[in-house]
Image (cartoon, rainbow, N blue to C red; front, side, top):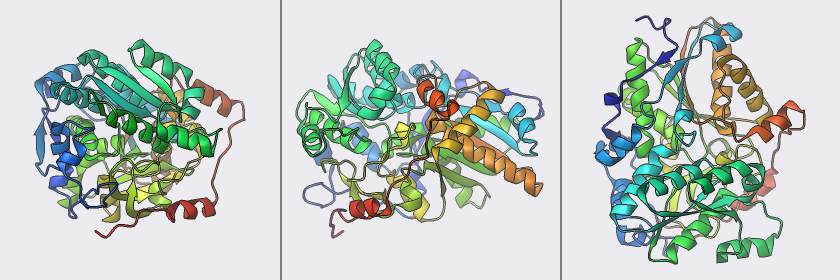
Length: 455
């Protein structure tokens, strides 16, 4: 069938990937070793065993190209996978562009985002290791929602430390986590020493992902029945998300097309890594495909950060990894894309960016919401503020194609819906949204506190 005849490109259920793709097997530059937060020496499996099951620790360092998805996880993926790939015909016409715009819609998952792709295997491996409870953090609430459901499906307890600015902006995210049986705590909280330390310095702190990670890691390390789970950044999380890009490649083959540019929003790197990593082997083989990561100007990790060793959290409890970072003490302004307010970036995405295999750009939130409204009015789907960053870049690529008279193929990851973000849309539509920035001096002050390492 002609690529211009279809709106929804659907893979049959038996085409759900049976293996995750591990880009570490093909990276030109191997990842720098993760370091112990105290000794600053390369970390070993035993060092991580207090908060992670061994199966995930082994995936974190694996160099196997393909890792089998457990059959029980494959079966649960059938609740929504394969997710549809849409051709944005109406948006193309509205932009008067010769470009072909495809969007992979991960919002069809039960929790409304891509996060369930990794929540299910993470909880599966924890249950297999005898763990009874998971502690985690969440920014906008998408990850916390996914983990709460995954824990319910596998019979584990779940405690979520939710960044306070999002806890207050998105009360219905908290509600749905509680419907699934999760316990939700506004972070910073008085339940952990890390939270109490932050509140002692700033009683009005609205929190950050780095702070919430510290609380969740401390919680997990303090109880033998509890492990920690992270929804982005780590290598095994990017690994699990590669079901997205693998399906995209098969779906675009169905319409005899291939992307000139692959676009995803980026905070910690999970959905961008998920859609982009399966295209890395093609790019290394000489295929001309651009991989574009889109971040908020209020938290521009790739475009303004330093490629250096840094803690993954504020309290310095998490491993020290080499990544693009704004410094673990950097607290981004309270933008509405709470899931992108992380000071660091996936080590995998960071290394590929340093090697020139990945590009990055940043946008302020008003043009992002302008793109989201444009998309919703023509395609009917209300995007999450995080996902709208990728849509902004896709629209700009389509406009550029129109101006240049070039019919590019654009593939974008619409990583989640925005049904719980209506207060943000109200602010935008009411003219009350502001483009927030930060002082360069604040960034430099944060970078001055990067840990000293000798590796």
